[in-house]
Each structure stands twice: as C-alpha cells, then as structure tokens.
Image (cartoon, rainbow, N blue to C red; front, side, top):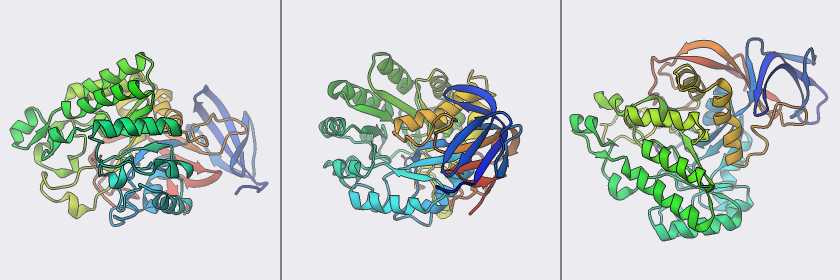
Length: 432
Ligand code: DOR
C-alpha cells in the first residue's frame, strides 16, 4: 500500500489513545495516518459507527510455535488469530525447536513474519538453547532488532548467570524478561499448591515458587541497573513486590495474562488439562490482586501468553499434558468484561493502555501504540464495545483448540484491524 495515493477513511468512531478520547474520522494513505477530524472523506470507507478506534493492540507474549511445532501453530495461523483479536503486533516467545537463541533463528522467524497479517517481532533467549547454562549471543540478536530477552517457558535459575545477563543486557540497551519460577519448588508439580491441589490429589507448586524469583530479579535489577520485565505474574505477593520496586524507582515492568485475572485453581476440579498453565491458576485472592495491580498500573501490560497445544497433547492426563492456553482472540473481550464491567474500576481507555501503548513502549515497538494522529503509522483496531458474544470451543484461527473460556459471555469484539494501512480484518473477517 505504501506510496499509493488512495485514501481510506475510518468513519464515525470514538478515538481512544494515550492522549485521551474524542470523536473523529481517520484518513489513511499508504501506511500512514494523514488526517484526523470531523467530516472527512476518502476513496474507501471503513465503518466505525458505534465503535472505538484505537491504536492496534500489542501482545508481548505469543507462542507462535514455529519453528518446530507447526502442528500446534504457525506464524501464519498465529498472526491470523492476532489480527482477529485486534493485534497489529506480537512478540514471539523463544521456546521453539530450535530455540530462538541466535541470529539465524531470529532471521528465520522475522522472515516468516514478513509474509503474515501483522507485525511479527521476536524475543531472543537469554541462554543457549534456554538451558540456563551459558549466555546466548544477545548482541547479534539485538543487532537484528531484538529488544526483549527471555528464556520463557522456564526461568533462569542461576543467580550469577542472571546477574551477568542483566549487566550485558544493560550495555546493549535491551530488556531482560523473566518467567519467574524456581524449579526446585515447582518441578513435578502441575497446579497451584493449596486447598484444590490437596483435594484433587495433584502435586502443587506454592506461590513462593514465583515470588522467590520475582524477589531475586528485583534485587539483581537494583544491583545492575538493568531494565527488567516480569512475565505473566500470578500471585498477590508478586504484585506487591513489583509495586514496591516501581515506587522505589527501579526500571521494573510487569504483565498479567487474561487467565490470571479471570480463572482460579478451582477450574482444575474436573482434571481438565485445558486449565493447566504455567504459572498455574491461583486463588480468588491472587486473581483480585492481579486485577488491582492492573487497575493501579503496577502491572503495565496485559499479555496473552497465547500457548497453543495440539488437541491430542491436551487430552493427556492432567499431570502429563503440556501447560498453556489460547488467548489472542479473547484477551480484549475478557478485559472489557472482567476489568471494566467487573468492578475493578478500570475504564475502556485503561484497558487499551494495558493492551496497546504500554506494551508497545516496553518492547520498544515504535510503530505501534502511537497516538491516532496525522503522521502516525496506520496500525489501528476498531472495536465494537457493545457486541456481546459467547466464546466457543473452536479455537478461532489457531491451529489448536485449548480454550479455557468456552461458554463464557463477553463484551467487546474487534470489527476491523488495520496493519500498515492494510485492512486485514473487515467486519470480523480476515481479508487474506
Ligand atoms: O503455560 C505455559 N505454556 N507457560 C509457559 O511459560 C510456556 C507456555 C508454552 O510454551 O506452552
């Protein structure tokens, strides 16, 4: 589209971005917004009446499974799910096979991403093969644009190695992101340790398995001056530590996944492995703390942790099935329903901040999350906030179907998604 003179006008919407809220039409030319205001026209009209027009959503935590597990997801199918969920950018997690731990695999993922429906960025592993033993060549990955490093799927256990990673990362100007889980407390477990694990006879991991690593990484961030991002926080104790670290001026950000502000460990009662995830679903008090953390901005981002697994994998017994659940097509509606309507005191604008411009800033994605204004890249989503729908078991565009929200009634649906000026979702349908 870039370079073309043809204009597209998004008409009749309520614009919400980091500068506030206003009514207005938005005119795009090529991959750029060229005008915003009342009564504008264009060669092509995209109807936004009754809708919110916002910067496209940005997911900091997407398992795209390519290379290596294409039966569960591909970059193509994952990006299709992403745009249907309102995302214009996703950050791929590195726990693929092989792991995204060097320049050649980063190049492969970015190359596949270029043909997909949204902007695909990738994280890079902190350690070689995510094995926690030797630092990965972070500089060569940073040179290709990698801005966030993580061994996600597992945390870096060795304190000294993590200190080195932070020192190195600080020098490179990148962010270290941690999957906080001390394996000596979590190994062999499959859910949260508490009343439900006792009742079900399943081995549980305590909240402290997460909290000890949150505590250590905050301490190491203080020591090294590194910028850190804590992935999928799930416990009240973790939220409290992040609040204290941020109040103390440390460069610490955190994210929460939709399942950790909507579901509890009671969901595991039927031994259905759809509800198995790492970190595990926790208690009512933890869910309330995550919601409060999102509301008061201790937790800056909602990230999906979209983790597709093939049906036959998830049909295994609870203790043997892989952890993870889908999220890309549900996050926005779950956030509107649970966080705006559910009484946590968040507005739609607050939710969009956690889903778009705040995660874009954390990952340094400067073409996303930008104000809806002339000169900004045309990465937008148009959301019908009044659409009510029921989540089904299909899994949407994903190759997998591990949906833990089946039957849940939600509010808010993506009507259109515009990536780099191209209308990739129109009236809820992917256009290619
Ligand atoms: O539940 C999870 N699934 N947590 C992770 O950290 C990894 C993810 C996966 O890759 O399936």
